[in-house]
Image (cartoon, rainbow, N blue to C red; front, side, top):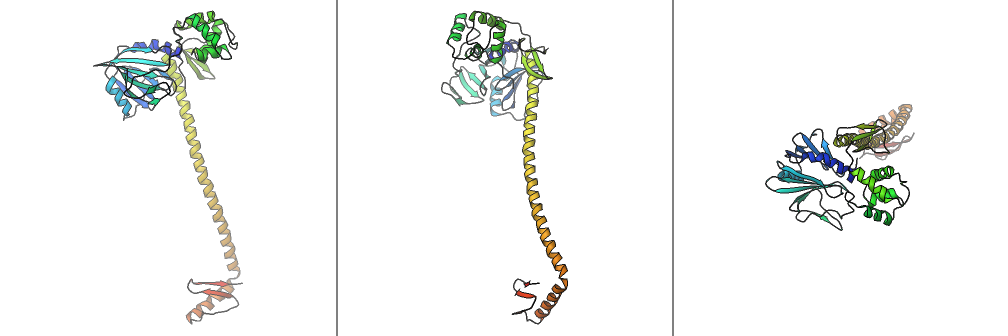
Amino acid sequence: MKQLSSIELRFLLRELELLVDKRIDKVYQLSGNEFLFQFGRANLRIILPSLAFIAPEKPQAPEKPSDFCMVLRKYIQNSRLRKIEQLGSERILVLEFEKDEKVTLIVELFSKGNLVLVKENKIVSALLCHKWSQRTIRGGIDYTPPPAKVNLFEIKEDELKRIIQSSTKESIVKTLATDLGLGGLFAEELCSRSGIDKEKKTADSSSLYKELKKLLSEKISPAIVLENNLIKDAVPVQINNYANYKKTKTFSEALSLIYAQDSVAEKTKSGDAAFQKELKKLEAILDSQKKSINEISSEIKEYESKAKYIYEHYGEFQQVLLLLKDLKRKKQLKGLKNKLIKAIDEKEGTFVVEL
């Protein structure tokens, strides 16, 4: 699934700001990690852990909402969105709602993803409760964001220079991607726009800083990137390393298209896995049935052999049966010794014949 970088989230925020002062009509939990917030005709869709966009339509929602969804409805349904912002350059959206009181919904688009409902900085409820070494998410305590990293939206040139010079990464592109938090795509893009060899360990911070500021202030130009008739990526601005662009009206539209494609692929993959599982189950049943058939076939051959033997010695068996019938009538079976009859079990009603 597409993973929004902090820069992409910053561009997306320009579109999400159109929701400010709109009333939220309904909250839906489409699945365990998918939510939809309906603002009139606009639908804010959040797919944890990595994606958010304004969806073109509302998909079918489960009839019975989860407990967490009910909490969200209680606190934010019919309220108005007063502010939406990005927390620094983190992949975190902060939505402030107001009705009778003010509450905040924090959307964490990293790691496993999370939705955290906060009132006066106290956590009311969270989709996922967890404890880390440096913070805890659970009801009744203050919300603490992840440990702050460098804010690449407000970074100064001397700070960028210090990060580059002190980095232990083997290449400048990895320093920009991880230490600065640009992510792989935009780290490579910044190197390309600056004319810098991305594989070198260090680089001129001045040109990088200049291109970073240009990138952050660039006018949004959303598109999907096609490769072999499939959507390779959705981008808010043109990327030098990409070709075969198809422009979209909004970045949300581009994100919704790649999400739809990836969802179909994932469901197909899941369906294939389920099919393979069912196929293995049926193959096991078939193997068991083949084994049973082989055993039955072996028994059939054995009985056919016995039947053939009896048929070939029919006269002798007939003689034995008549003799036994006569002796049984005369009650003279005990101690019977005969050329053909070797043993008799009156209790079981059987006899042993040697031919």
